[in-house]
Image 1 (tube, rainbow over the protein chains, first blue to last red):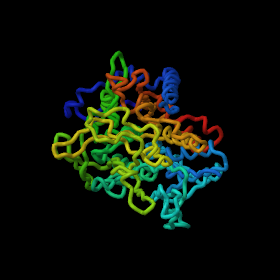
Image 2 (image 1 turned 60 degrees about the horizontal axis):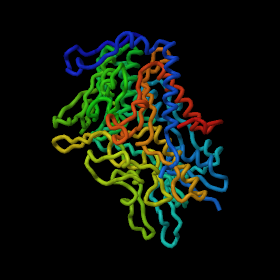
Image 3 (image 1 turned 180 degrees about the vertical axis):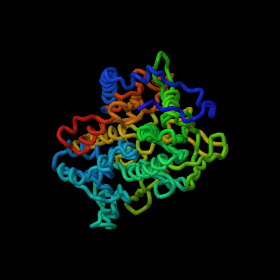
Length: 60
Length: 484
């Protein structure tokens, strides 16, 4: 699947021109399997940390 | 003699509370669930039903067999009124319910309780905006049925595009006080991905319409992330994601009316505008369930237990004060109400105030996202309330657990395209959900635990969570080890 093309002509909306867009390298790494396997582990660890901080006994 | 705990509602908060109550309480104690719906819906996956990637039965399962196996008494009914002091000479607290099951339809009953958890969730308030809703001019993904309807309409639109007819899609908020921007965000990026997958993307104009002041607010006042050597606001993150996908957006808007194929809205600047559409998925604002409360003599005490929004008042600071004086400490911690044996869990509790900066148009229209009410805090609150009640049954004088949204984080995975190799999702962690500017003066949140990233790994996590949480909700082996 190719990356989407903008269906809007450039310049039609001002905010269209003022946003940050990812480079080709950034887009590549988003679906590059070896890198994503690593990120899968890293993100899971970050989420488990958040879950562990979730709820706790009452502190007076 | 055993205690009886009645749980109103079987959504994420209610079902979590009932499951843990049953696990932690001995068989001499009763756990009763009262809910008008027989199916459990894993709502976060409704997005995929709405674009035709899942069937409704893949996000739903029947609860009665699960409750029978677990030893939970299930009544297919809706709660009508709470009598915290009992009725007349009978001082036993009870809740009036009305059956919705075909065999007992309309029959009323009073169910006595020792402890009550109100986990009735939100009422989808489509009536707040004329023309809003699946029975009128827009679709929704709030329920599996709504999402299936959205998917059917999407199929029709795709056929039209294949015949060369350009289509306009509008996704977002159907009112100036909506929350759940995350769901609309997920739907629009999944819609865009699916249109690309079906080869008709070039025939579609896709626009996001929101009550947020800036994209990425999500009802949390936005968040900040460390990225590329900068601390970046979620506005940048979200705008980039939309621009990359060719999605246009309109923010700071209150939808005032929807006619077939046309939405009318007012902006924060006071302008009256309209947008045409061929398909619109606009979410409704939420209200609390229509519950009343009465004292022993039959006097109406609804205002004592419930806020005007219909949500239940708990141990929050509801004093009206300006935005500058809002504090993290305003948010509830134990979810106990004015009656010590009544708790509210999940979406059913009344937030003390929004999280986003409150704003009004020159005409006085409130255009402020309501606070986020997502699954993870709902489940954590449900479990904390269940533990407190178990401990109180065993002798504790007061709730033993806290679960303030200003002291807990959230992990959120927002699907941005469902494919095991080319899909992506935005994985976000935020701590705390409600910013605490006294503890974290600059951004209100701990940047060591607030994080966001887009990638395929997020999609895998989303799939993993779908299966894990359905396994947990079905109370299958080792269910209680799966965290909220």
